[in-house]
Length: 75
Image (cartoon, rainbow, N blue to C red; front, side, top):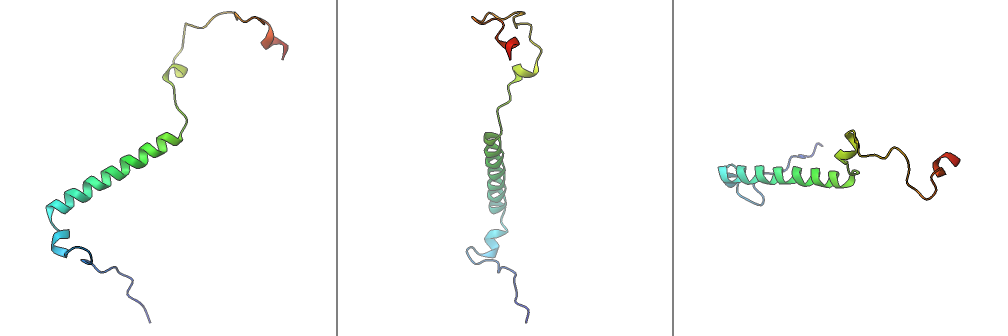
């Protein structure tokens, strides 16, 4: 009644090839590449973070130079 759900090994490539050092290095590089791609994809989705916004700045004006100097007070 129970079906064997295990995937048979060596369908596409011989099992001896799957156990070689070359295949281990190839699988590792593919895994690292996949993780890097996923991290870059997530980083592209997130909003940008500007370091300037987190550092205190002495470059800010003490008063506005707008043509409507009290515009922010009227709100």
